[in-house]
Amino acid sequence: MNLSDLKVGSKGTIKGIAKDCPKEVHQRFLDLGFVAGATIAVHSISPLKDPIAYSIYNTIISLRKEDAQMVVLDAED
Image 1 (cartoon, rainbow, N blue to C red):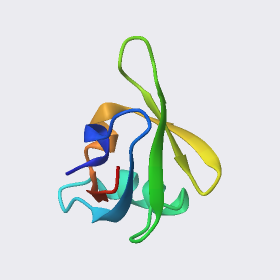
Image 2: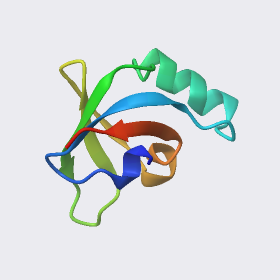
Image 3: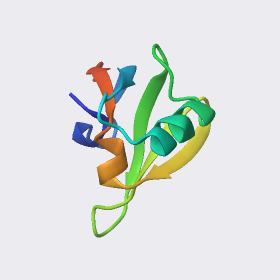
Image 4: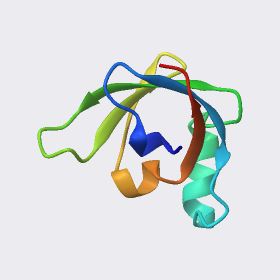
């Protein structure tokens, strides 16, 4: 499962970043705290469904769907 699969109100635990993720995007994720074991939840979805706002470490971060697909996670509901 990846981050873009989560629905509003759902949360998951980050397992890692996809191997085919561009180096610059991977580094950006690490800088924002997207590390294995971190809990992340969907905060809100824009009217056009892209981007999506996520809550991680008490911070709201908005990601495009194509970037969110690079984050691999376990769903928690």
